[in-house]
Every structure is written in C-alpha cells, then in structure tokens.
Length: 144
Image (tube, rainbow, N blue to C red; front, side):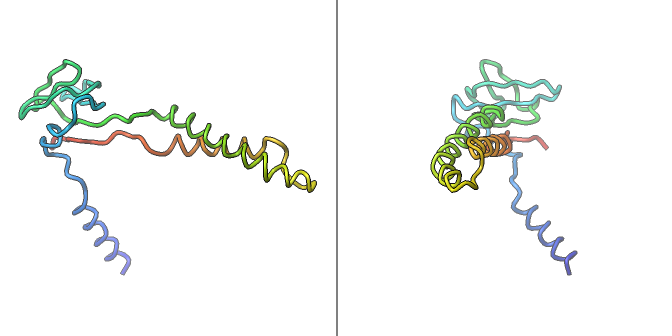
C-alpha cells in the first residue's frame, strides 16, 4: 500500500512541478531585477536585468542570445551572512527583552539562568534561522 501511495505522490509532484523551459518568463522580468544567467560555455553573467526579446537577453549591458543561455535565475536580495546577522540581531533584541523581564523574575526567585544566557541563546537561534531560511536562487528559465 505504501509503495502505491508513494508512486501516486510522485506523480502528483511531477504534475505540479514548475515548468522553467518557457522563455516568456524571461521577457516578463522587470527592468532592474537582480538576475544571473549561465551560458553554454558555463560562464556566468550576473547583474541588473535590462531587457529581453524573443531571441536575446541583456544584463548590465551584456547581451546573450537565447541559444547560448542554459539558465536564467533571480538572485536573492540578501545573502546568507547578511540574513544571519539580521536575524541574530532580532533574536538578541527579543532575548534581551525576555532576559530583562522574565529572566530577572526567575533570578529574583533564586532559580533563574545567568544574566545574558537567554539573550545569547536567542541570538544564536536567530542567526541559525536566518542562515538557513529564505533567499536562494529562483530559476526563471532553464533550457531543456
């Protein structure tokens, strides 16, 4: 029974998978979007999208014909390190608030954590969440 269920789920996933082989999606990009493309010789061009026609794409003044493009992708707004710092700061702020209120109450009752422990743990957790979440490269077009 589980093999049949797995096969059905596999078929459903294949049916709903995104089709990235349509050049129309490249033409629908907005001027100024952060994009990148990989050419057939595996050279990479990254920058701001300028324009696209039926047979070419222009990124930061570099025009590449469609038959030389293997993949076009959106670049993330923030890289992994920046997200880790931002989320770590958010975690530290939230942890500082909890440590200053509830942590102080627990320490007053003589069975609470050391000062700063909650802040450090939430900052580390926030940095970890920021490093593994969001961002990423989204494929707009992939040649088949």
